[in-house]
Image 1: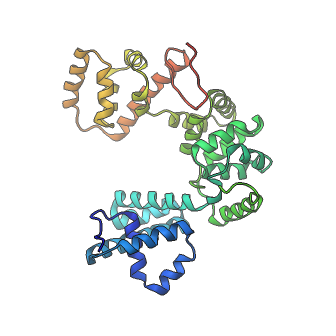
Image 2: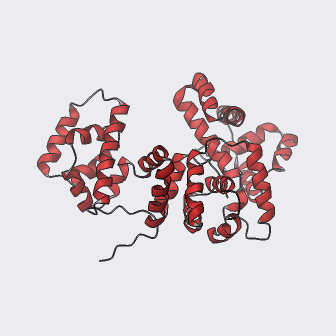
Length: 337
């Protein structure tokens, strides 16, 4: 007899839910699963032995809450779902559920696109309406989207980027209509995967992955018509934690221009690992002083931490613009020795 693993994985939880439904209802669910999903689920069910009542209850509670969260998200939108779930289970529980639901929705829509070559996708979508292109790119991975947006005609790039950044919620019916039309159009091409609905953060991820020339062009052109939106995208493109990924020379150059008070406050909102990167690039004396001052720094508001971090990100931007440090973005950046 195979004993149940001590780790109650998501697959095991899914198997427990299927077991609790009984044969008739389980068979109905199987109709909506892919062959590989049926195979994995069946294997998990076969290996589930000695399932305790507590674990069954845990799986069913989690499943019920996810269904509830998905209902709120699809019917009233993310903010509505967050408001309702906050009252029921607190902010952390609500955020966890919403994140899981949006990821789940993300993987279901446009499932056929994920394996497509971006080069093929460009040729098929470049004649679509910019809003349709924006919707499609919002469901692709940042890597796919960045490759596609880089190859779009120049006159389309800015329009599509602006539409992605301002996209918030899209009706599931509209997504389904676009998905059906595209699936029919791509039926003769390699099968392809998908999801999230754009927004500033997502556009920033795309621009972080495109080559520097495309990034510069899109941001410069967008700033002429949407200066506030463009600045918001810029703020999201490079965050404080990213500074720790710069090379040692760049971090040391950055540290020469920072206000140590801002740095102390900024480090309050990050991990010990990130903080140690900064300390490692300081002189021993400065590092000791900073660590000592940090011990007496209490009661800092998150808004103050974020403001300090943004100030330091601005220092990095200025140093990058002046050519004093190099910030790698996208797959086409090259350094010539």
